[in-house]
Length: 430
Image (cartoon, rainbow, N blue to C red; front, side):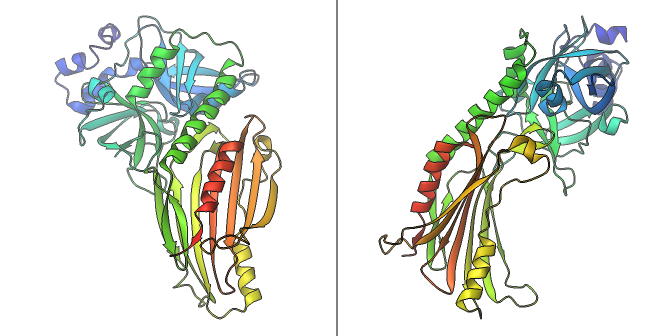
């Protein structure tokens, strides 16, 4: 153990390699002094409410973990405190220094001095890591003890606004914030999430974001409440950049039956189609839909994930419904959908909706629309809203297009601009 503690970052696997250990064994043998379990405790009760993992990145006790592992302490420092237990048996307090909300990272300090630590892989920082490289993810899953998971690097996830690494390894709860390293023990990414309903589909935050956070926050000495303010500011800044990017990318036109409607050009949307054609009993109105959703959500708190952006179109045509029955189907399809009730009352103001008819006297290529606009504000994030815009064409008695634009955590003026652009592109197909 003494040899390990004196190894520092450069000698992470040198001791294990000298013993002739193979890859995973070599990495794990030299890792314990560098690995942490980070626990969030209710300060007054002294009992843990959640656990995650972390890893040392400097000899004087600086460590990286996920923001979602320490979010309670960041948002409510008077209620929660942090502690760590090292894989080598050491224990102590944790001080939260800085957070990177969009990339779900946090920088903390623990009471370790002259400790061995992890270094970052240069190829990972430069973005030149080859696909297929073997990686080893480290962490404490389900509080069962520190574990090593072998998998492969598969590059960045496609159709995602935030950069995430696709890692074919079995991450589990409690491993969040642990490192994923190469065979030399150098950090390639930070464990962050797994895909529910999939097998060996996991995600890492690229190491370059952790390296940047370390450089930015290593000398930070935040006062109580500063990090909460920083979370609020980072959310507003990041969402502003996202919606600017969405507006800059613009829309392209797609034909849905007799209508033409907008879909975003942004590459970080994933689109799927659905139909009720095979439903039983046989449907009395055909509904063919597309849904394009952005992978751009952000974790704010245990009861708040926000950032969804969706564009939906449902081309609907009567089979054997009369005009009034068909109108009922359209009303059901056109219901605005915003978060309501439960813990959402903690975060949101009551929603306000407005409905109107627009374009009744418009040119022939713009059908008249029944438009519903609903918005609700965030209690904690001044100037940000969730908005749902729904438009239903009104030019035919047996055929209609129901179009929906859903925007979370957006500035009101940005929502108005995007909404107008969306409505203007709803046209009769040429």
